[in-house]
Length: 441
Image (cartoon, one colour):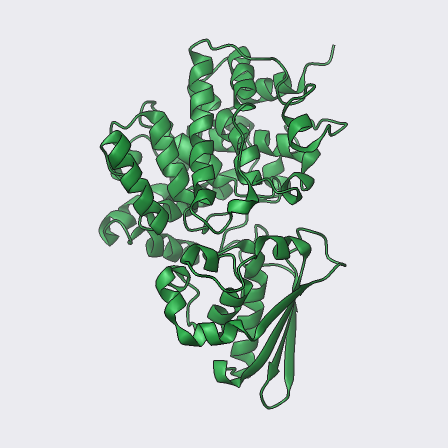
């Protein structure tokens, strides 16, 4: 008798050890932890972080950065929301979303009650990545195209598996946890460009920890809440007609990898930003030289980038005109280029009206290719095509560039001295204890 998909996920989750992981995974996951902890600390200083702080003071009488002695589920929620607050976190096509914000926060939260070393953390992250990717495979990318925020929906299962791995749940307990988690996924793309988008990831991290802890305590659940009739697959995209298999010699983490964000905005803008900056530098283009900028991108970009005239920093992250204007005029496409104050820059707003973008039907829905054409006031035209954003998995950031991003982010909330000590600890993650890191955030 073939075991259920949920049983297969549970067997995989509960049996994988650090020694089972493929070579090279350490470096990938360590990079993910460095990047995610960095953007999480920066997220605490964002507009969403301010609201999160007020919410926690009102309801739990603590501040967001004060995680010592916080309940595990609430620590996961806090870290999850902060990690995605600036849309500066990594992503993977394995789930058409952002994996690390669904995995690192629950792992960090559980480190406050468990003795976790770096190898435990890397194993839990890897298991969680595989599980959420396996759940995603039969219905992705159509699930995302239909309007679901795949980070939150698929990520709930990854967060649960990561937590189950760290709690050392049995196969049966893990299967229960995943079935419990099937009642929790939510998140709509209609809330992109608002504080509700990072709220999704906070709820996801909390859901994963909650499902695993309840399973540990003996909660009951259905048996096929993902793959069964009217289960997750049925309800969120229609029956997929097949199920994937988790194979130890074919890891999603190796096949798809993780892409690190170079710029703090929607990933669908990154190829365009890089192409515009290349043209600017090559031809010495200034804002006043430009008559019109035409961008051609995939339909996925058009669906995500809905703010032609952004009114807030979060809306600016999902605005192609703002991204292009910043790329053309700013020396660095940094966090400060996507805050609400930046929208007062008259030069940027003047450029908005000169930017237009259309969709190229020859591109796949989630392609990140771009074609940029800039027409100068003098009449000449320059153009460039770019297939991929910078810092993709196949060409990750150099270590110093990653460390610079970490320091850019963390020093918004903690001192540079503390940030460098934390970075030193994280760069050797496999040999370090994770327990205690949450106390030093």
